[in-house]
Image (tube, rainbow, N blue to C red):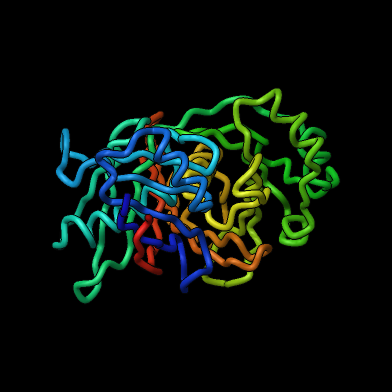
Length: 302
């Protein structure tokens, strides 16, 4: 078996800084077991497989695997796969590429600059808001004290396809200090639908950005932290407009809408930039996560 594949970097400002992804565009004949075995051997946080290079029901069927399991949805694999579909399969400028995933069809909006892809935007599913947690539960799991957690908005489970626990912190010092207590984390997630935590604060390293974020997960390729997480930031966007997080902040328009830049991955030496747009009218949400995708390499899997 010899299969072409591509390595892309998603939400990257430069090569090899954010979340790398392996994409296999000719995976029609692969079994589930073969895809899982390849994902394990590639050993990226996710590997995706395009099951047909011809659209089916107006979208391209795609499956997403971690080294250990299949996922119904994930943010950076969705954007990275759409990039390869445009570059290697469609090979012409299109405004939308739709992926048929386990959670349903996900349309990706593509923008160009000088004929080259500039940004890709992923529309998120309608969010659901779940369990709210006590500060004491999170503090012990992240090695923080209660005073470092911002109590103006709740600690809450949010999902747009994958659930995450949203944790507002007061400042960058608290964000940088956070460190997973694995025993406490595993004990916590036994009681929650979400198995991952997103922490964020309004203090940033760059004045152009609006939030700093870290995401801790049960396990990603042997490490408990993810450098760039589209699905988690989609949940964050829903949380921000649901609770009007920014309020009177001067650099973001007040109200149930946001258009912001989020930095992630600095603590593990892989700086990333994610763009979030969201608005809420009555109980209806529109949420998109965007960013750059960079082609890193092409190879043959034998």
